[in-house]
Image 1 (cartoon, rainbow, N blue to C red):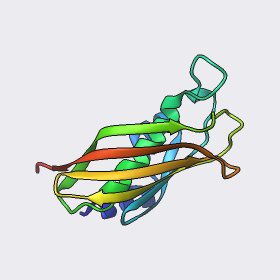
Image 2 (image 1 turned 90 degrees about the vertical axis):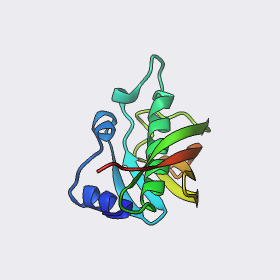
Image 3 (image 1 turned 135 degrees about the vertical axis):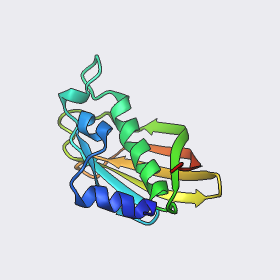
Image 4 (image 1 turned 180 degrees about the horizontal axis):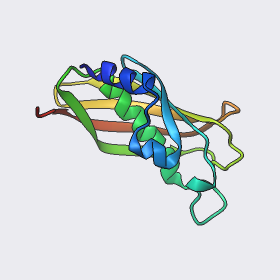
Length: 141
């Protein structure tokens, strides 16, 4: 199956990625070169302070970037993050409501891909953004 077919299958089956189970987010939309995840940050994602740990936003952004790339891959290919740069614009709390991470493919080469993503809260406010460089891998049978 192509990357898009794999992701569509996961989504249609209602499956979550293991990290999505842990952090309570899921893939809700995918098309060629684009992916969207949604989740509700709560106390399960808090760090030692009174806000959601930055790793929550980074994880959603990383997933959105990686799946935007994966949706464009041929059968037998996969990807892994080489670099993720996150900019935090606004803190998330349990009052942020449903957040969505929207990733899009910027470029896809034979070995390297580039993607970007934005994390938006329930009010439409930009909370974080990211750029990502990803390595394209050939999966072994």
